Image (cartoon, rainbow, N blue to C red; front, side, top):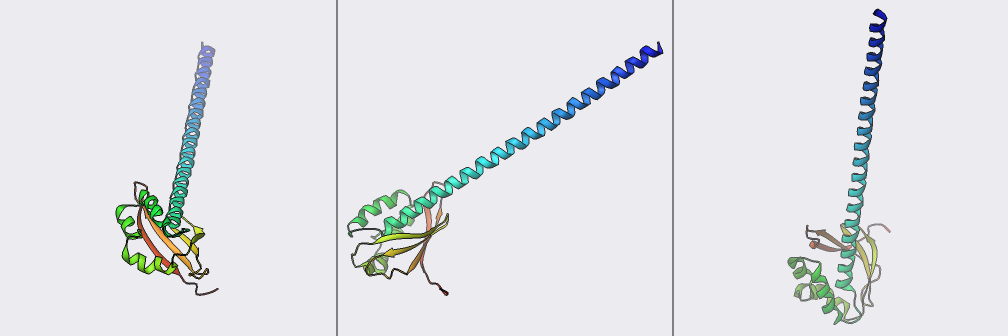
Length: 167
């Protein structure tokens, strides 16, 4: 009888060890699965953010080209129609060739000569570029800084000329 009880105790003890081991294995699998899901989610978010930034950079480059790239002055009117599609109304009003201050300070300097935009560097917040125009020094570098709103439109713009202190 003692032997039977001893055997039963050993069997119960063995069963407890097996149950404990399988519970531990289940926890390990659960943790591994949770880590895999977190990793995949992180990768998906990173990929999506990079895709959005690339799209925004592409739109900003297109905006700079619409503003300054033309073979004849009449092309600017067509470019402004395209520009209106991806800017807020206030930004469009700021950038349009119909803005008298902009025309006086920018477009008259081109003297109607064909102009090409040369992108030097493009990021998710600014575009560095030069202009090829017979009336503008080719070494002048300009910057187009921008922000987007939640609707995917350029919502804030700032432009400047960059002056290198060291060459």
